[in-house]
Every structure is written in structure tokens, then in C-alpha cells.
Length: 347
Image (cartoon, rainbow, N blue to C red):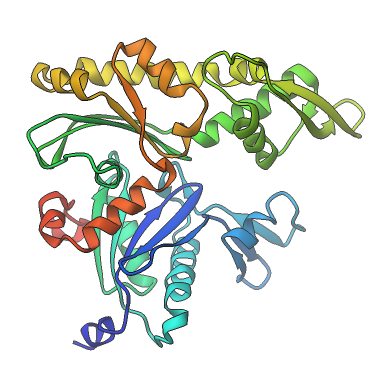
């Protein structure tokens, strides 16, 4: 009763709890938070020093008693307490301007397709401990499809490939449910790791993950470009330990990330092979939709289209598809009730 009373003064939230970024949506303002899923902790005092953008700046630059922690690994919670504190920080931040003393919002949150009951319960408990009065779990691929304005309730197949930070989810959706799917616990972060490894082996140069991400965004591509592009990269020489800079081009980055991209494409083909023929016919007609940050890699849509012989398009603003999907569900309880995933406590 008390929670319900406090709920009247709280804003209901849609949350995309990602490995790399956490996004928060409110019905009246849209996306109000888009910050890295990073928390800086003082290990001596267990004090939270920074969350989000401020904490991300500290990665690789902290003294021994301060840790910049990513509490989610491959789309699931690896550090419950830190995740809870991060969510509480974001929920409080949304309500600060309203002067709500104890926010008790309803929260719709996306979860990976291959999540276990234990992992599902961890998400529910973390959100409730952070202040939510009610938690609704929905599959991230379903949220991404809704956020991309795809007809998820109709008897028509929709294929969506969501390439996030920690996971790649390939799913075929029809009649409000996921018919066939495949999840890879490899996505944007693994592409960064491949670039780090390649530069280490080819140039004897050690770079950090933020530099690798910058390389991926500036010169990364899935298909050969008409005009080659390159950029300067600075790191630590592994032979003499001194700073050194090199120039790297799009061809070298393609070589570094090619194996993982081929793996994603092979998994898309495998998912198509296990999809009922009637639905495959719909997919051939309507095409494949790419969502998530990985969809922004140059030429990835063309590479997938060439390999599958199916039209491929990138969703509008692919980075925010999942959180926009949760936002649409905030104001459409009828649709939410049709596609909601039972919570771990409901079995």
C-alpha cells in the first residue's frame, strides 16, 4: 500500500541494462539517461566514487585501491551489489528533479534470450533492491523489434539481429513470441578485443579497450571501402616499454574482426535453417533488421545480405531500439501483457 502511494509520485521507467551502456526511458521525456555501465569503487572503503560517464573516464587510469567495474558480463549480472547501486543511482537521477524522496517506479527491463532462472532472478532482485515497486521482464530482441516498429503481434515473421556490447541475439518473431533464436556471447566487446590482439601481434603495440573501440568506430568496416581510410594509434611498445604511434587502415581492422563477423553470419544462416518454411518466406519478403551498436559497423548490412541473399536494413537509431521498445510498452499495457516474460518468482 505504501509503495503504491509512493508510486504515484514516481516515473515509470523502461531500462536497457546493457553490458556496455545503460539507457533509461520515461514516458514523458523519452530517453533521459544513456551512460556506460561502469561503476568506480574504492575497495578500501567500499564507497561508490562514480557511475556512468565519470566512471568510464577512469578505466585503465585508477590507482590500486580504486576499481572501475563493469558489473555486467555478456549481458548478465556478474556483480549483484554493484549492479544494484548503479541502478539505484540511475533511478534516483531520473527522480531528482521531481524532488521525489523515495522513488518507487514500475520498471520494464530487457533480458537476454538465453538467460537462466538464476540470472533472471538476479535482474529482478537488483531492480527491486534499487527501488522499483514492480518489475516486468521482456526479451531484449522483442523489445528491439517493438522499438524498431516491427509487427511483432501479427502472424508475419520478423527477423531481428541485435548486436550489442556483450551478446549477439538472432531471433525470428511471430505472433508475439520468439519462434527460433540463437545467442552468441560475443559482440562489440569481442570485436574490440580482436583489434587489441591484432595490434599486439602485428605491431608489438599494447593499446587499451577505449582506443580499440575508437579504431572500430573510425576505420572499422565489414566490406572493402571505395577509398581506404586510416588513423593514427598510440600505445605502449611491448619491446622497449616506451610510447609509440602507428597508422592502421580499414583493411587491417577487417582482418582483425573478420573471423567474428563470419561467425555472426554463419549463426544467422543456422537460425534461418531451423525456421519453419512459412516464416522463411516472410523473412525473404520483408528482410532482416539489424539493431544494437554493432549494426553501425560500415557495410555489415551489405555483407549479411550478400551471404544470406536476403535484404538487410539497419533499424532507425539502432543503439536505442531496446529502450525505445520498453518505452512503448510503458504506455501499452495490453501489448506488455501479451509478450511479458514470466519472472523467476512466478514459477
